[in-house]
Image 1 (cartoon, rainbow, N blue to C red):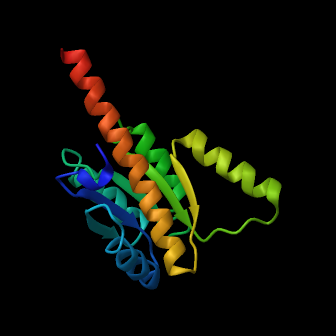
Image 2 (spheres, rainbow, N blue to C red):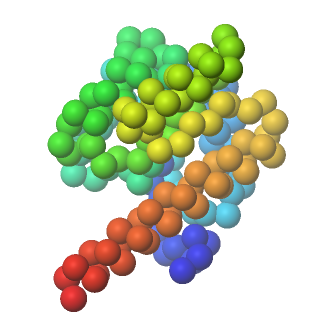
Length: 157
């Protein structure tokens, strides 16, 4: 099944404190080939409250900014992975963090993957590039969902 053939739209949660970045993301999301519903959180505390309040109906994917007030993305991903109800949530790091050097960047990305991030995206300034990155990330999520459905079907057969 191709991602475009999905019947139900993906539920996406974007946690980002920057209003312009949230708007840019929303506009790009409307132009990708995968149907999606977007919910936003404007800081880490708001994100964690939303996830706690909606733990029975989690989004398919969380796009998580690292640099947010009140609770940053690193703190959020640690809490997510420690919570039994949230630990399988697909997390895409979506940040403007720029490396001090290549070694720093690779170490930071490695730490994020060890914490459970699935993808790391440095926020692009180019709209078309943003659309491509979102589309690619969503296709990976769709493939994971389809694989999980197939696995459940095989296990239940």
